[in-house]
Amino acid sequence: MSNEAAENPVTVVDWTLPSPRKVGMILVILTESALFSIFVVTYVYYMGKSLSGPYPHEVLSLPILGSIMLFGSSGTIVRAEHWLKHNDLTKFHQWWGLTIALGLGFLVYTAMEWAKLIYREHLTLSSNLFGSTYYSLVGLHASHVVVGAILLSMVLIASLRGVLQHRHHEHVEMISWYWHFVDAVWAVVLTVVYLISPRVS
Image 1 (cartoon, rainbow, N blue to C red):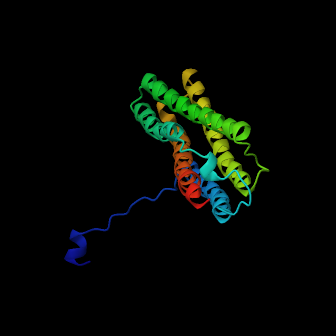
Image 2 (image 1 turned 90 degrees about the vertical axis):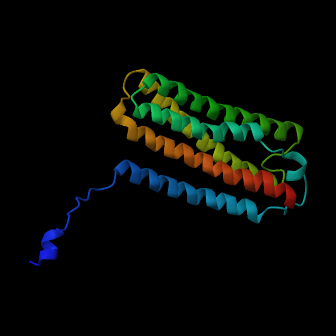
Image 3 (image 1 turned 135 degrees about the vertical axis):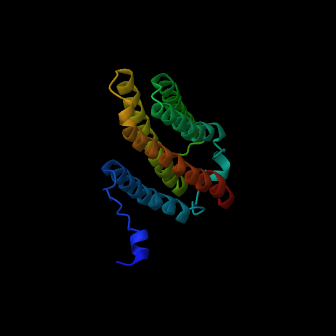
């Protein structure tokens, strides 16, 4: 063996399998991304092709409050994770509960918007191409917010019952990944539906 090899021994690094939870959540997010891509492409394809009203520029208004609540919830869930890492369950409960409240607030805002569109503007699934694609895309996103809110609530209940502990951080992290994904999808929906389509119609 040469002196150089003796002075610089090769370090063997142990390789471990990636976390099954993280792999599983990545696959879920990739699958859901493909699903949302189909709906977004469909919306864009039919954008501006409705032969009758109401049209996006006539009935849609920028959902500023709802967006602030949903995007803000990504910040609160990060704070909740921070306090769970530090084993401060009281502050974890506060920030996690605030995340749930913001998610529910977004759903209430969406429900109010839909009520306005349906009963005041008479925009339904069968009104025109815009109505069909709008409710399909926004409704798909809203259903994922509902699923996320249920998962968040289950974690909070488990924690309040003393089941959730510091060692369960990865479980909580995976749910936060899902929630961040839902927020990221809303950024796409917000851009395509509320910022672009009213200019095209």
